[in-house]
Amino acid sequence: MSWTKVLTADELSSGDRKVVKVGDQKILIINSNGELHAVNNACPHLKLPLKKGKLTEDGAIVCPFHRSAFDLCTGEVTNWTPWPPVVGNVLGKISSEQKLSIFATRVEDGSIWVDV
Image 1 (cartoon, rainbow, N blue to C red):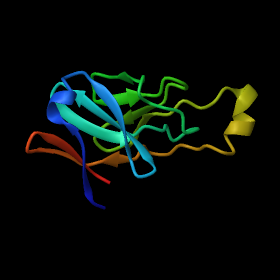
Image 2 (cartoon, helix red, strand yellow):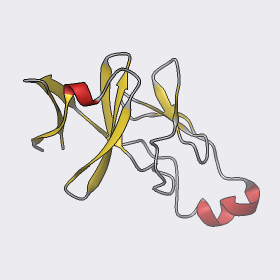
Image 3 (spheres, helix red, strand yellow):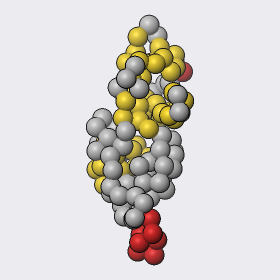
């Protein structure tokens, strides 16, 4: 792992989200009331983007495609929504309950850094 500067701190106001690319990874940076979170922008289900996911009051992000929720601090699943029975037999074989990849963040010298 190594720290990578991804944004200046003034590029991410409270409530903002930005996707940055570090190597081959797309990382979603979220400023939730002054608390920074960095997560893999791909939901573990089918690797669909999380950027437009709802943030909950208890610190989770909800996948906008299938409504599973992940804790922003730990990546743990807080609510797993299985696929409907019609598609579940197919998709269930390629996607099971998995936690979300998270990355440590820090602000230093006016920049946001992510440990990738």
